[in-house]
Picture 1 (cartoon, one colour):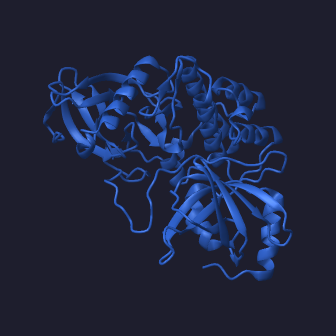
Picture 2 (cartoon, rainbow, N blue to C red; picture 1 turned 120 degrees about the vertical axis):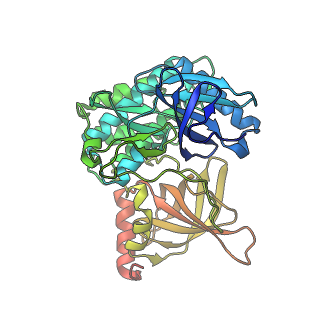
Picture 3 (cartoon, rainbow, N blue to C red; picture 1 turned 60 degrees about the horizontal axis):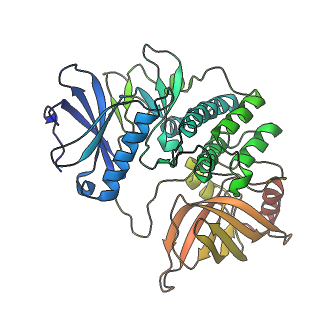
Length: 418
């Protein structure tokens, strides 16, 4: 498959405007309809992946899901087709606004009320999806878009990328609970570092429980719980906080392009073709989740602050056996050092940055066993030790008793940050 160039016709119906960006398996193009001139976003497989069955099936799955789930908080499908080469494509609205992770990276940290309002809109979208017998399967900040309403109206959340969606004919089950877990993880990330009311902290902990049966059964239950807190703001103004006068269009895969001259919008540049880095296994970041119920809830630092957290906190050498519980089972290893931001461990096999892991280890000083939710932030091979790797884990949520034990230990034994 060859991508069309600017000005060329795509599938006899659309004129190519520009290439907006590359995702994991797809390319997103800005185009216009030949007859109506309507601006659209076209999602097609990346050329080197166009022949892969799973890539084509994923895009067709997204088309079917978007056709069945027409909702205010879901990106709108305009058209779809299959080229003469047999390659499927999806045509959607061209959104004006920004991905949430781009906004947060630009400094638009949401207040708790805004975070709850965003979570509520996400729950509304997921409730509609579940009611139609679908699950999304890939809810994360990178698939959440804050769009300006036409004419400059209120901001509204849009859920993107349905290529991992599923339809079992029933709205409930593990898939719906996994969507709820991911939504709760997103909310936990948005409120990281804030003092939370007890009911909201309990809501997040239930939504992201490691036991599926302990979570909300579906998004409708999560929505009811969010409404019960009474914390959601009536409207958000996150785009207004960071936007310049120019308008930025970001397509359903999160690529951005400036539409008007003037000040440069505060958003990351378009995604480029991925580049492998030696010793690092690339992956999309996964949502976060708080941990053990029944203890004070203290959110840890946001995802984007991992490097600063790792270097900015004093660290202390600390060696103790550790067990990580991941989706595929358990991994036993040992710790090397610890800080209030995270912990470094050695495990016998590679892990993937962005993966979530429940960490079980003995606290320094007290010896009490603690379980903490973590996310993998770095993976480095250990020369001469076979498949063993050193893994940097960031604490997603750190309970007050765990934080205090680490703080006291570091005060006695820490080396300076660096």
